[in-house]
Amino acid sequence: MTKDIKIAIIGVGGVGKAFISQLASYIQRNQSTLSISVVYIARSSTALISKDYSPLPLTAFVPEKLDAAGVPPLSVPDLIKFLKDCGSEAILIDNTSSIELASQYPEFLKSGIHIATPNKKGFSSEESLWNDIFAAAGNSGGSGGYVFHESTVGAGLPVISTIKDLIDTGDEVTKIEGVFSGTLSYLFNQFAPAGGNEAPRAFSEVVKVAKDAGYTEPDPRDDLNGMDVARKLTILARLSGLSIASPTSFPVQSLIPKPLESASSAQEFMTNLPNYDADMGQLAEEAKKEGKVIRFVGSLDVASKSLKVGLEKLDASHPIAALKGSDNIVAFYTKRYGDRALVVQGAGAGGDLTAMGVLADVIKIIARIK
Ligand SMILES: NC(=O)C1=CN([C@@H]2O[C@H](COP(=O)(O)OP(=O)(O)OC[C@H]3O[C@@H](n4cnc5c(N)ncnc54)[C@H](OP(=O)(O)O)[C@@H]3O)[C@@H](O)[C@H]2O)C=CC1
Ligand SMILES: N[C@@H](CC=O)C(=O)O
Ligand code: NA
Image (cartoon, rainbow, N blue to C red):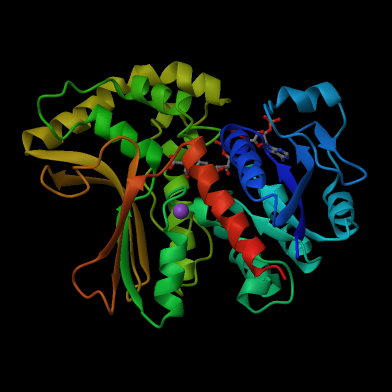
């Protein structure tokens, strides 16, 4: 029997565009067994809506198509109603970084709508939202839709699925540490290379390259202030069984120069960042004199319930110092694995790699749908 699925996509930026392209190809490859129709695509102020639930064309999709249509997006209650009335299973893909949308996940789930998302906000904000999401979700004991969020940590790398498998099979996580930001990995690999022979590049210059490559958050200050890593660590800590009130409830080091904390826009921040290249350069130089490199590291210790995010000086021979490009590394220490961690490593940012994690989540949802 062919499974009939309707999909709504919100967010058509770096991740959203790549997702639509990968989904189009998936639909093409599986058309004999799956009937998948994308019936809603939205960005902040415009949307494409297929009122009769016929599939919207996905080939050669460009966000400008939404603007040309000129239709305002549906409100959340109207979108829930639209998807509930579709006559088949429905999946919401949230490719935004909006807390307003994420805070409505419990309502979508309670209405039987499934969710796949790389948006960290729903899982790393106030603990009550986390509790409401998983109380409603069908894959965590609730009676609602399924929710999957692999790309919220390490983009498409199997980080969330790995920790869930460890715990579901009865292992206990004792400690997790690593590099959780593609942007900050790329930044320090370029700005303070471990090799010695490579010429370091100016801090602000590398931030710009990371932004242009699609590694940063929509506003790069969310990477540089440590909050993106703090959110990822909050998600992993909660999955490890810790109660974490919010991503600001533990120490997080910000790399934003003090005078730029009050910058009124991302653009103003980027324009003025080169003025502080010398300060960051000095930090890297000091570490180099000690034969070390600086890297932005996150760690959590379950027994002491402590989480920490910030710069560390590491020996050039340390596995973290050897990372290349936008690589993340996540070392899981558990009762079963003992002193030698289970390690997940690879590129941890970028539109295509993040979209791959979201599409893999969609495929998991489809596999669970009767
Ligand atoms: N880029 C990466 O490497 C990774 C990204 N992620 C996460 O993926 C998500 C998307 O990232 P990315 O594609 O890079 O971001 P972009 O800024 O490129 O795109 C964001 C998209 O979301 C839309 N959007 C924002 N707010 C709303 C809203 N309230 N309602 C409707 N649409 C909205 C924007 O529309 P408009 O332009 O009209 O405002 C835009 O289309 C983020 O949550 C990010 O944290 C996760 C892992 C890796
Ligand atoms: N801005 C994030 C994107 C993925 O979560 C990063 O740099 O890792
Ligand atoms: Na992941």
